[in-house]
Amino acid sequence: MDETDKKIIELLRQDGRLEDVEIARKIGISHDTVKRRRNKLEDTGYIKIQANINPRKLGITSVFILGISLAPGIDVRKIAGKLSSKKEFFFVALSLGPTHSIVASCFARDQIILNKLVEELRTWKEIEKIETNIIYEVLKSGYHDIPVATL
Image 1 (tube, rainbow, N blue to C red):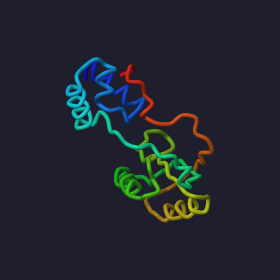
Image 2: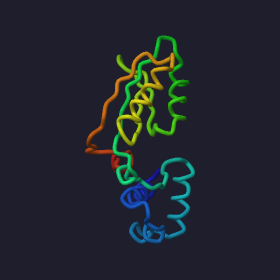
Image 3: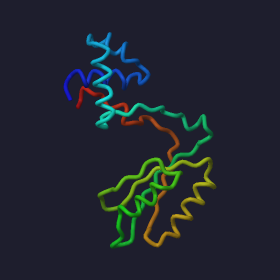
């Protein structure tokens, strides 16, 4: 990745709807060069253009972070994969530390739905402990906010 790629990424980070022609004008290179480089950045996984939804507008008013501790000897990746397949989870990560093996974020329309989800997870014999944190306000969010200049 060179400086031109970084400029393209930075412009798309600011506005993912920018057309190649506009990016080319702002950077001072040809439209074809921007198109070729943007496609390569997407194909190689450096960027992915997608919509960021506002969950509250869709009626999802509750977001939770779960700290999950597993019983000794359990395959962490297997359980994380099982969690990842559940539609309620939008973030699942393996964690190194003294408390949790897995940290996961999920959404629910209300506390009752969360309670049912946690009750279901507690029936999984592999899970030893679940700590629930309710997110009541988000001050900063998103990998898409990482400035390209720091890369």
